[in-house]
Length: 138
Image (cartoon, rainbow, N blue to C red; front, side):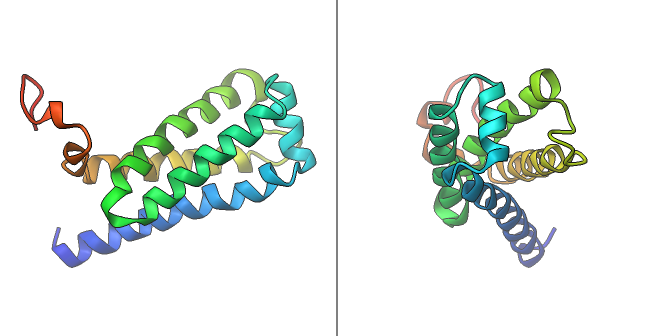
């Protein structure tokens, strides 16, 4: 892949992950009935809704800053892994007759964050110095 193509792909992935996470913040921070329902069902209302919203905001900002994209994407993978887990175990794929929209958005966010982590894995070395040496050196 050329550098220009690579940059376009990385920016497309950045924008998709950040846009989805930022868009859901409105619902979390305004205590929209859908968010309150989800976090009540998980036994995490209101602290889980607000706390996860704050972490999603941080992850989104980190993703949009080129120097910290890998950290934001890694954080996003962690958050969205939890969302997918709860969709598959407690919430179901179709939450309040949304046709699986939230689940699909979670899968798209997970996929874009995972791709960013993979594509920018060497960037993580700046933040995790012990990986530079040792048996798992990249």
